[in-house]
Image 1 (cartoon, rainbow, N blue to C red):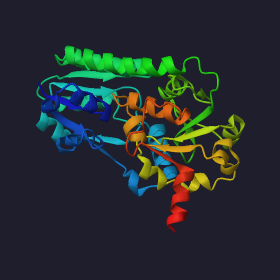
Image 2 (cartoon, rainbow, N blue to C red; image 1 turned 90 degrees about the horizontal axis):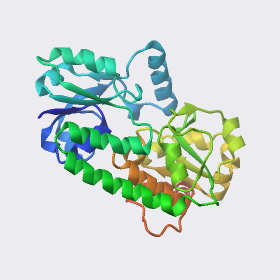
Image 3 (tube, rainbow, N blue to C red; image 1 turned 180 degrees about the vertical axis):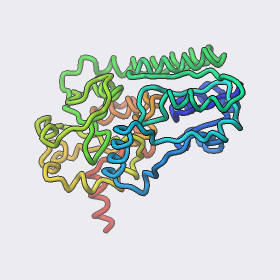
Image 4 (cartoon, rainbow, N blue to C red; image 1 turned 120 degrees about the vertical axis):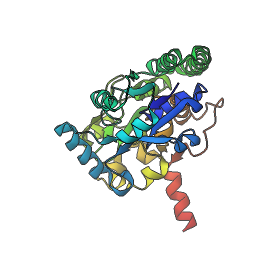
Length: 314
């Protein structure tokens, strides 16, 4: 069995199911677990996010979307070389990966027709279901059952702790900083399960651009910065335009020091097993008294504390 993953999330699932040796092709973004970096890359990007500002990235992607162009490129020669039996892809978001039509077209370079499994999870339950789908397709149903049961139990624990929570802070999860986008799909559901009041975005729906007037009207008590595909360092490198905005310092979350940067790339952007880690991270952010859980290393940064430390170190 030769598996090709066109998504970082499915790469994580393949390894979680013990199929790392069967994985023959990945994307340029597949970095977890670390050994995924050693696999043949069959997907590349036309842009290098580290060389562009947040607004430049958004403008390029929006223009490509308007013109029906992809931001990603399938390396046909690499795909032919790895010659997969199974391709794991998605139809959820053309911004995040190659489109389904491009995948079908690309497989024509192969001497056979591989099984294409297209996944479109929009909720936490659907994310967990994708593990079962991949398990059934790869003969690892038992391992998938075990992983699914474990993840569901962790989600249920958070639900049981906060389902009746009345003191729910208003939460703004920002999926992009400049221009501002609110996080969609599974993130609003994560906020609600973790005991927060999700403000603008809607569960199961895509992220979308918002105005600063809408953010001011929401008056968020907690802001979680989770730019799609970024870790904390990436976000810090692009935060200047956000915090220099005329409305920023008047928001309740900013005044109270309740602005958090999270490793979105690991725990929020990718619909894989670590989404449940993200749920636990949110629960701890919103309810610090949640003593059953401690933050994972390098997963969360309080922005005020960061600036205070910087000023102290001089």
